[in-house]
Image 1 (cartoon, rainbow, N blue to C red):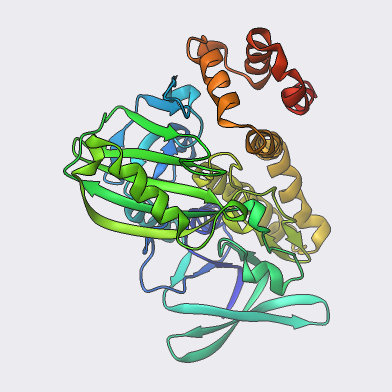
Image 2 (spheres, rainbow, N blue to C red):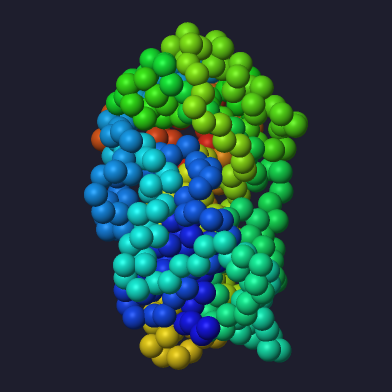
Length: 396
């Protein structure tokens, strides 16, 4: 078993990497530890319509609902409404995430990638300092797979990255604990994804309501691990639902719990190994959303892999092109949003209410970090010192 690239993980990042690499002629294998691609679902299931630009999805079965935009609610209830094109990478579609993942994986196989289910990567094979393959257990059989390049697409706190010597451990300050119900028999506005902020609502995070139909929605919460204790996320989510009549009568048809990285991106290239998606922390530190950057990063990784295969050069210098490219493509946004996250964490609810009041009538066709900061400071000069780091970053 010899491949140009072995990709560990069949999520959007791993399958996108496989698809685009196979499309360019690389011999690619995806290893998936579970028995089914896309299960269990661990996601709020929102994604921006820019996903269409990557052409990794066919048909529309993976779409649960089309969104007109997003609404952000301050602690005092003040609402900011954003059109879909201005609302970021988490609004546009609410998806069936299991079908979403399966469709990207199907496209990868269609382009020539191979996929092995029930296959758990257990370690890396090395000759000296060079990674030469992957050790795995396929059902009950121990196997060894040769690879010129290994890709870690194995999610939060990637084991694959650690095996290669990359520190993928997240501090509680950079990790959200999450819980989500899919509720039926509720009332929701199908046109908008809603976000609720406030220290008493979701410390260091937010509550979301993502409609999947007229009477069905994902209702979830993310709480910063450093500000929470065991079971807090679920308790706060239940409290939020009980206080909203349109949700209170709902019944859960699914429950999910998990963790989401909200830190800065990690090192993504080590020798002949790459990290993509959540493993690379290609996740928006404000929203915790990462589907778009996973697919985009996967495409950039694949192009680097294809170039390396063509040159038959698999050293760190050759593969570092991938890190340079994702930093240029979306790294600045991730860095900026990490600064925003830190600023928001220091703000009291009173300040968040002031921000919402300043922006509720703002003309978002002019949306940019710089213009928003100017609008906020223009109405509330006292915010200047708090927003100064963001202002500096927006002008560099």
